[in-house]
Length: 398
Ligand SMILES: Cc1ncc(COP(=O)(O)O)c(C=O)c1O
Image (cartoon, rainbow, N blue to C red; front, side, top):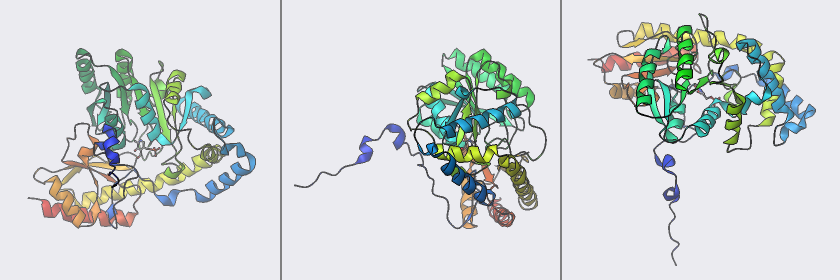
């Protein structure tokens, strides 16, 4: 008798069928790739991590066990000391959640707090992977425009009023206020205060994603939202992905104990790797992480300077951009008259790729924008890649 064919996708949940790209993404082939918020692998502290890994195995083999290990405890202690130093906050261990990167914290917050149809407010543009998470959970996503001072809080207030009048529960606002992905903007001090006031008035949580906070090239960073949060409305999300390496897959969330408990309650895994938590805690609490950050930031600063200089030299007639004061990205707007689809094809023929702007928008608008990531490229690759972009633009210009 013939075996009936089996189509596993007939069993899949709707979210799995919505054409969302699975992880891990395929990276483009032998081209200069301006996609991805990827740290430069030359920065990975290989020897120090190897030493730390050996020390953890020798001194604390419980780090290889399930559960709340002493490795988690050491990492929590380190993070508590970091929050005291950077944000002037005194935290207890029950205010820290250790996760597989910042990405997991966003996903846990979504599962814990957002029901289908609930309003989630995002920046427009916003971090594309986070957008994917809100959409998978059928959140009602609303993008608020970002300018050189970050999220436009006037526009936010108008939107909040509208959502309230529609009777839609406003659960959460997700923001990357310091060296925003994808624009590089910093949310101004005044707007930070206003945002906190609006969160109190409208009763929503703020998810403050600080992934790029350490990558400051110039100017001062205003105090974080978490530093100014009197009401327990801010969840501070951080990660070691960019300041150590993404492969450690260790990040954290800090907030009100009830929020941290809610994140723990919806976990579908059995914890982030305690061994890697121990390795990171050993490395970071020795003081080496701070020295490492001081060493690597100038490298990214030089890349930012190079891409801005290259863009000015090769692409100025065709593109507009703001020089980001930190972070990994430049967000560009294409001049009128150049077709973004034709430009992407021409760029690929020239041997480069970048991320189309609509991927960062809740409503898939902003087709005349794109994001260039310079973090993982060498200075020579940046020069060659932007020269290729200039050629592609010249070909597509009217
Ligand atoms: C704003 C932002 N948040 C979170 C992440 C994911 O970080 P992690 O590797 O810690 O999951 C990224 C990665 O690009 C990011 O750009």
